[in-house]
Image (cartoon, rainbow over all chains, first blue to last red; front, side, top):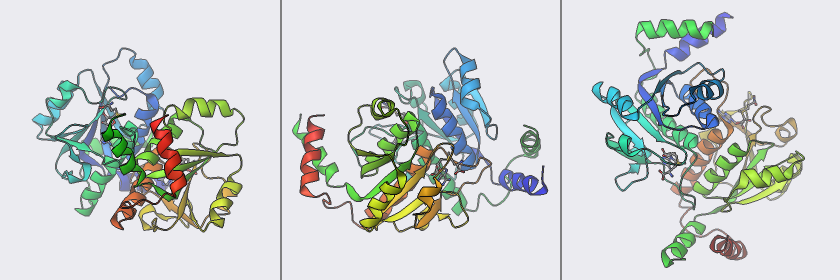
Length: 191
Length: 191
Ligand SMILES: C[S@@+](CC[C@H](N)C(=O)[O-])C[C@H]1O[C@@H](n2cnc3c(N)ncnc32)[C@H](O)[C@@H]1O
Ligand SMILES: C[S@@+](CC[C@H](N)C(=O)[O-])C[C@H]1O[C@@H](n2cnc3c(N)ncnc32)[C@H](O)[C@@H]1O
């Protein structure tokens, strides 16, 4: 481990945004989950909440995760419980979902504590989740197809959220509590 | 075919940007190509140039394309030839590639005729392609992983390009030549 790499880890940890998270609502294709994890990391999101109502948990762990342990991936059986947890902490819940109430994704203030719900490949965001959301958003599209790939949509939303936070100076100083910081630094050093 | 659907096709065709294209340099995973095709469509790009130096062309046609024939997909055996074709038409060639000369992706003027080269999953943009590019770009990342998924990076770049063109009013009136327009309209009606 070179001193440069250690320094790089500190620099990156200090940009992490603990109160911005993504909830995947039964997204199941490993390549999508893997692309989403990479985008979380790239856009300073420290925690990904994977709602995984399926049985073969091994498949998920083994294939989707690979070596990408730079993001804390928490799994949940039930989407309502996952969302309620964030609501109790005062997060706004934003669903990436096509519906009449949806606004363009850049119209949301992501500098507030925010959990973004992404829908499954075929079924989109579940009705159970939609019951609990505060806002719905759409990444505007100019073409014939009905939707983007879910990992693509997630990245476009996270990129916007990260830019808003950057413009507000929120990537400037450490926001992780010291315990999370220490554990994470250790895990990055000894993966 | 409802009159609304016919009208929708005209509205979308009139937004298409014939002088903005993507070249995939040996990108080979079907799910990545498929996500890229959807993003091209969503961001008003009418033509995708797939450099496919591999043998099993059937796999590519069959699996990557699916039903998504809203974008003209042209295939090329050789990346140099594909790029030269655009250079001769006066396009700027922009590679999404990590190198010392690279600038942030939003620093490029995409309202000029532009071909964007995306690199393969493992190998990135080939040396042969890099010999011919005018600019290199990077989507800035704030995390530990070295790169985004290629379809994610492509979407972030195309989204920026589309916004620049939209702000300049380029999505306002038809830019397709009438032959392309007619053929494409016909194909969308009778897929
Ligand atoms: C492939 S889409 C499936 C959409 C599903 N058929 C539906 O109608 O809800 C999977 C998920 O990607 C996200 N997504 C795709 N395109 C999007 C867009 N343009 N804006 C916002 N979210 C999008 C949504 O979270 C969606 O639930
Ligand atoms: C998964 S990357 C492979 C990178 C390859 N290992 C290299 O070092 O060139 C595949 C392609 O995605 C694109 N890409 C991924 N992340 C990018 C980023 N942050 N900025 C620009 N392009 C990116 C590039 O075109 C790259 O060639």
